[in-house]
Image (cartoon, rainbow, N blue to C red; front, side, top):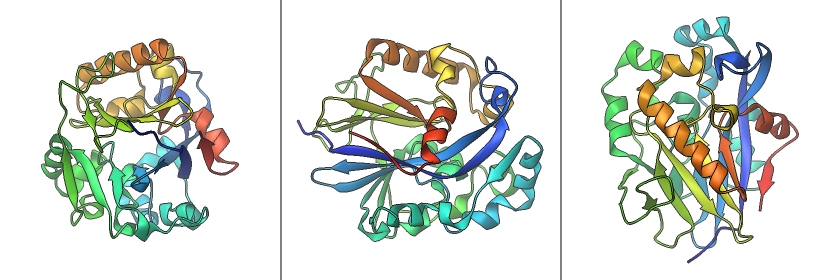
Length: 278
């Protein structure tokens, strides 16, 4: 059994949105929600990314027609220095050295940096890959998919096994076969969404939830997503079942950190710079 040294969180900009649109139990208040990604330090495989946030080509996409419509409910906060490549380089990580990337799902705010990682293998579910490719052009964009980000990607499909279990999840995938990173099926937000449980040398665990929950209150209260989340969801019932699993994990593993990609509390910390968890 191996463990990872640390997880470093970054943000690639974000949105200022009514928090109630991400969780109906929150007050109606405009709040910064980050578009974050993580770098996991693995003892053998080096820098392993979880998602890629926005990248060098994302500025043009965010200002394009379909996404200008989102400005009515969420104001984008994005500048060139937010892009994934520059965030990595700010802590002396060269994108070309990254060989493994876990993709929670294929929405554009998670795939924007993929084309800036020329030597990476991208780990995701077959269901996610095939589901995204069924939507073309404007239909795909309106559901959050921008195929140009991942059309030429070197992908490896994750296979969940019943023998790899982390309660309450009934299956999982031991990414490197050493117990350090366990991928968990968390479908609902999209058809093939997955999350990653990282075991650290300190004994701490970090569950990188992706968009299985948009903010921590979705699973701590628990409370459903509002306008933003429900508008992009693949399946409401599956998404809620996943939220309840996150809640069960959170309650039974008090030593663990559960980190949704867009959580406002994490966003406040990331405004100061990258956040390291050991």
